[in-house]
Length: 260
Length: 239
Image 1 (cartoon, rainbow over the protein chains, first blue to last red):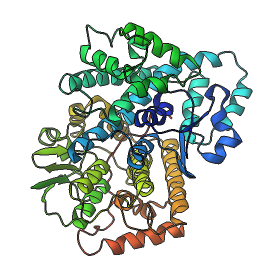
Image 2: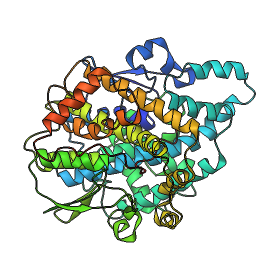
Image 3: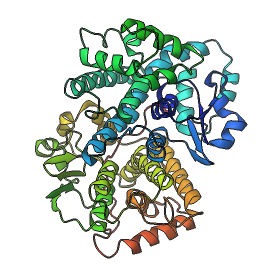
């Protein structure tokens, strides 16, 4: 039995959901409400003492690193292969995932959380915020949350994150003008990894991701959004992610009927 | 024909050398002099624009990123298999490969730099401008010297890394299970520097270091511990 503890089908939290749905592997989803800080609850810390999501548990084997967990899912289960068999193409797939995980996704997280989450903390009792901070097990995480809660993210850092995201958009557009999918001719974990964070970019960054400017990236997003597995995973959200995804599908001219 | 651009004192390079040796693969060695900042010279930046060793050339293709090179070598040259014997072991391999990149190597670079009291000579600074923008701030901060608080935080992070290693090694001899794998080769060259930097190594980790040394002593074995101050991967910027 495979169990997934995550929040919305978004970014790291979404990776195992997208992956399992594409693979057609049945699983149990335990929704961890980040808005309620459930990732720091004693129940969840018993599964992952680091208090990070997602956690994927397969017959008692606990995995807390989202990209390695995706490789595990492709490795351990039947279903369509999500990794190229050629070692060089695999290296390319992994290189893109590493670029995404280490450079691009944290930049988008910094921008998005400062825009969407930071306003929630304005005017809150600092003592109470400190108590919430104290519940976060990892010092690295605690430092990011502290910047967010007390509005201390340096403007230059956010600017650098914007630069990195713009650069990534250009890089992916270039790759997709050359190959159908990000790691070659076949859909792979690299596509899932990028889609998990980029699925609604035409809404959040319309000045950068748009038909006129990035036609290949838009076409790739359209093909991703038309995939049954990815769409089913997006439908597992309870919050705004599902609504935004529906908005993007409408924007891309996709109907809401049975997906391909 | 395999060519490896590498540096003797670079832990990432050592990982690749260890796996090339374990696979019995011959290669042409292109030593890059990190102490002389050869990695920032236009000739090497043409090989890897990020200015990082190692880079592997195989069949006319160029591959960077030490741990991803290890996975490539194991998949391209499957004998003897070193990627882990089952999906769980392979997950552990990937988990440790990632942990080296995101935690151990970035913090180790900061501690090593501070430990050496390293400074960058004025003549070297212009080389930073040739780096991609995401590589520049790290070197600029290194040139200024890392603050005490930052160095202390990195020391803490490495102590936590040692504790994490101990957790896995308390239950088994090798990082990914019952046999030597890419995980051991990815982590070992970094962690063997801990003692020289006065970062405590729990007994189980010390025993494992000795085990890896024995396993790899028959060829391509690790050089002496050399604490070359240089910057590796960037520390996480957000969480």
